[in-house]
Image (cartoon, rainbow, N blue to C red; front, side, top):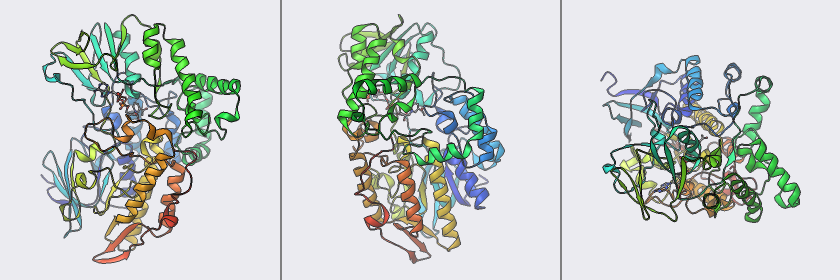
Length: 563
Ligand code: N01
């Protein structure tokens, strides 16, 4: 209890990519007394928890890292095209050691409450292990997909076998050898997990509710030449990821689908299929905005599934996809569809054979009982807002964040919520976040927040708080950006909160593109933090209310969304 009511300049919640860089930035660049509180027993964030079989990042390793330091970028060498959790954790440990970050992190410390104490102009934080401390600034670095979603299927408590959620995977080895395994869920995670589970399982039943498109990842060790290219082209790669709408190290084509004839198009798709990875969606600029254009890619990908999967009924169930390609987060895989050609793997099409309940030794569908030793829930997350709602966060006048966000998250630029002074949310709802490669989004937010705090301190400003009307305009703009894409046409997407019972159906991330978003945030700074109320003691120093032409041009068409 040594830290009872100790005050810090800044408290950061979370020690993943965001929290680590924010700590370095505030402590070493701004000289602030900073503490990080982390629920896990070690650093890593998403990568501390997600250790499920087959887990691997879908972003290419040379872009899935920090770029704020040329030295760090060049000193680290990735081994494969896509990094796995172990290598990512080693990387974060390397960064942490280099910057001496651990000394300011408290592990096994889960934040339960964060209340704004108006008189003191401070946040008071209470943790599950009894720590109470205060800070002037509170920064959430809690990730977007960190709150596991376990569906409410009756009977789970009766199950006598083992069950796991992919997002809370045990640190010790889970053996599937000769076991009867049921995997529920075929999103990005399930598509990565199934082929690896099938390698040793006695039998794997994959319960699929909604079929998914997937493109081969084509993971491979990085060649000596590529490693050299990465080392020699730091500036160029940095410029690329920071200037594309999705933060990935490839440009989205400027061509439109119907600029090419069918043969040319198929060649483009075939080449992208061979190359593998998320680059498939960058083949044409209108794939994510024009349904007819999208149909050409969707048909190509469906025909690939049918050409791989030998059993006709299974191929049909896997390829009967009724929403646009990349309308949900597009997975990439290693032998996912090939896995269904194995003797020990079968697909359970939950649309036709619904799950009634979990029994003591399996899953009862409306057609049969499937005996199981292990159930793997690859059922996703209460994304973006879920982790916030696990904490009791209260702003001015004791107002709860859960109440302010009841109808959907209300933020200005995804960075702040009106009524919650000095609370900053890294990759919060209303920012590009999950539609992009995360590290460039994180770096942009961390740098923006640090710059804002520097400005506040230089100008003796005590509180920074999003203006109500600025947040209203921003939420409107976030909706308009989404409406300009096919993303909103997929009713069962987690981007809309549709995967969690009772969650409001609101499109949460900003689909206007990372490059555009960055420019808007920079413009806000240039305009003296327009849309943020900056107060010193009780005087308003700056309360420039935005007018929509001033801050973000909501009428400007979103041509290349950040997805
Ligand atoms: O979760 P999901 P995820 N009965 O929500 C099914 C990121 N990620 O963990 O589509 C039966 O996408 C559900 O069915 P449906 C990435 O951003 C990143 O796979 O709702 N099925 C769906 O099939 C990704 O988008 C990497 O009908 C049920 C699945 O469970 C995000 O994480 C790697 C069900 C959930 O899919 C989440 O992906 C992996 C029920 N009751 C993931 N409830 C990287 O590369 C749910 N489902 C960094």
